[in-house]
Image (cartoon, rainbow, N blue to C red; front, top):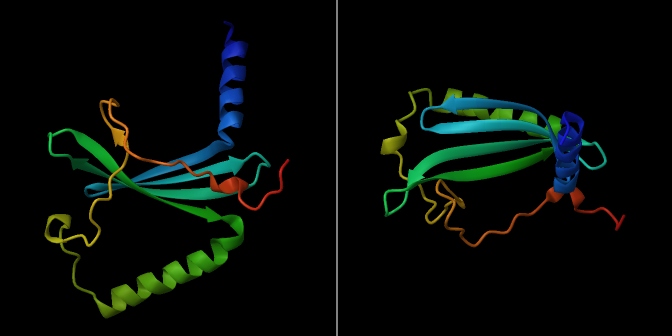
Length: 139
């Protein structure tokens, strides 16, 4: 297969997935990593996904990544960023002491696990929902 054929195959796979990744940035923050990904819908509308990823271990000692994902669309950027700035300022003013290490913080969320086991041999109940097509009429 020629280089042109490989590139075309990758383009087709990207289009089939319904979104194209435009730009990415990873932010490592202690035991967490945040991924900021700019993607495009089939109609070439850009949107942002923010993914929090934490390395966890199951009972067998195998690790997996627990992920939480947020989809943010252009029409919501201004309201979202204004509210985020306001909340961060509130927290800094109302609670100026340093944040406790993650090991000392107890999570209220239980049973929240990702399907991405490192060995890939076990898949848990999971439904992948693509949000960019919601609200569109059948094309």
